[in-house]
Image (cartoon, rainbow, N blue to C red; front, side):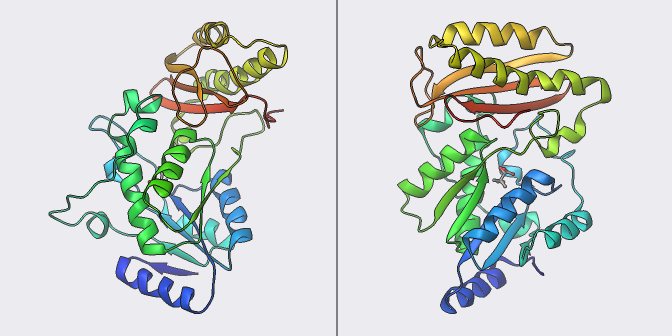
Length: 286
Ligand code: PAF
């Protein structure tokens, strides 16, 4: 497994791989890898002959009062885990490599970034789109793999890739969950012992939402009210949003159709968790 810290070196390595007929798959990450990331990597292996991951905690996607400084980092551990998942190369740049002095170019995806997380994290998706555009230019992947847990991120990246005619496929992979249903996230490491039970209010809300949909409920307001009350009944929770949106434009909807997503963002103590469920699809929670 090769480690690249220089964008230029990785770029020319990827150019030679492409000229040699190799297909490159790519999993961008912010590190502190967990089973969810490893699943993305295993999937990535299926889409190409050479698998690259990036590990970069991207400052541009964190707001001024967010957790950039305390975001968990452990490169030695990540390197070991990545090698078990068949990764061929890791891109592990310093901040200055990605944002040198006088850096001034950003990518804004307009509409799909406005609702949901965009309301409380106004610069987040500009940072995500920018870093992904830069990483795609460096890695030149044929396929990039993203988790569906970050549903709005996936929609945003798909929109950017289409709108800017980027020459790669973006693939979304189902959320990996702990045995008790909690969606895997590097931020779960922040949860205190007594907050863990409250954190399950998210995945349990998805089950409740699915049950209501399966029983014929199509009024978004009715489902949102029920789930809001359910989450609020757990200690240490503070709801950022409970919304039902169109899966393509991410605008709020009143009546559910066959392309509606239930999206949640909830603070549990000082940890902000997100989760989602696309109605009508299977839900992998036991
Ligand atoms: O999902 C993440 O870990 C990040 O948002 C990403 C896609 C690696 C961009 O920094």
